[in-house]
Image 1 (tube, rainbow, N blue to C red):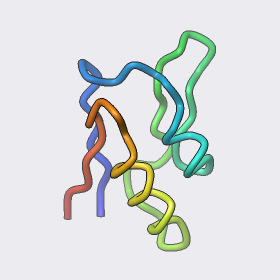
Image 2: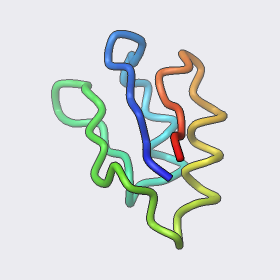
Image 3: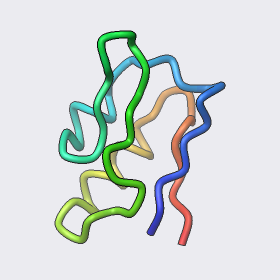
Image 4: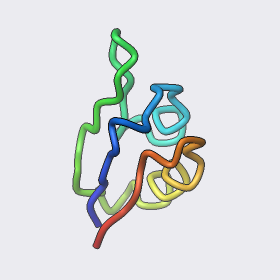
Length: 63
C-alpha cells in the first residue's frame, strides 16, 4: 500500500502524526511530511486509522 497526500486539503492538524508517528510528521511550518510513502507492514493498522481519521480527507491509501 502507498500513501497519497492531497496537500491542498491538508491543514496540518496532526491527527495522523498522533496515530502513526513513525509515518507522519508535522514540521515546524505546520506542513505534513510523509516519512514513508510505502506503508510499513508493522504500521498498517495505525496508518489505516490515520487515513480514516483525517478530518479533511487529505490522505488516502492506494494499492
